[in-house]
Length: 386
Ligand SMILES: Cc1cc2nc3c(=O)[nH]c(=O)nc-3n(C[C@H](O)[C@H](O)[C@H](O)COP(=O)(O)O)c2cc1C
View 1 (tube, rainbow, N blue to C red):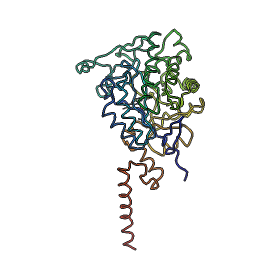
View 2 (cartoon, rainbow, N blue to C red):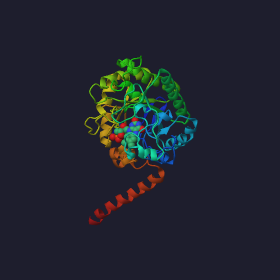
View 3 (cartoon, rainbow, N blue to C red):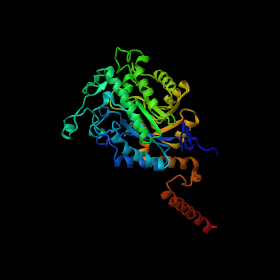
View 4 (cartoon, rainbow, N blue to C red):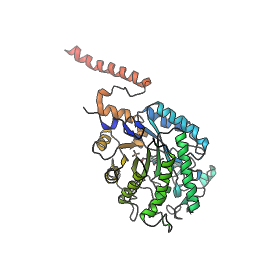
């Protein structure tokens, strides 16, 4: 039997992933002042132990003001490097590639943690010492009624933001990450430049598609120049806004061509988020609902893609790769449900041949023997009967 693609290694620049399963960035809203702590270590370590090819650290703010909530991770100072390096080192020691997503929340900054209401910060947050801060965006347009109105970014502030992304990329390299992703999706800063619903600028950074793409592409160029040449760079897009008059899949194909021209290696194909707190478009969400985006972007822009969104079963993930719809699959909530999803996927696809050899030896050694014992037990009554 041919080795399933899902569990076959893949090489991107000088980085080889042991399989094509990537743990999607998952905000934990559990940092203080942007610092990674033991929660983040345990959260990410279990995915490395669970057999993933790459494990993404959540959206990590390039500047304090670019956090979504007070609990977001950050990389805006050198002090943030050491705890991230500790996580990355452990992830690597377990055979997975440590990856990190750099982000700025733009007009979706300064909001509540999901479990505090998922809305604008209010008196209950202020009572906790978590007040609002000044937020910025391409245009002074609030995300929705009742949300903070952002300040329109000046060219000088945009130059500062490029510098924040550059410094954060250098720090991510210093921390030892193997893969870096720029967050260009979900209504955050870069996506809000792309979408005509949120970008009403009349200067060179607004107007037609080329104008709206200018700042996100400058960030991609800046980060690529700072990020080591031998390490791959991903860019996450909201493939569609899913709202009339918004960003479309045709637009994403055009963006992906420009990203390829700037040496971006993989487009991570999500959707939605331009209005409201969602991280997927308001379209019917069935298993694999965003896979057709990854497929078309891959085919028409000639760039590698990562599929994400309700990828639940190993067979489904394997089919996405076999059909050439994407080069990598990312799992998010299914990894929260089962941090050992990659190891279980290997078993589902290979059956007994998987033999626990990719499990951490501390578990695999026992499980292999337990299984032998159980098999012998099953054979026993059959022997007695004969
Ligand atoms: C708890 C949680 C946190 C998330 N944080 C991020 C994030 O930091 N960056 C990002 O791009 N997407 C984030 N997402 C979106 C996921 O990466 C993923 O795209 C989405 O959950 C769909 O995949 P799934 O169906 O496998 O969960 C988050 C989703 C969840 C559920």
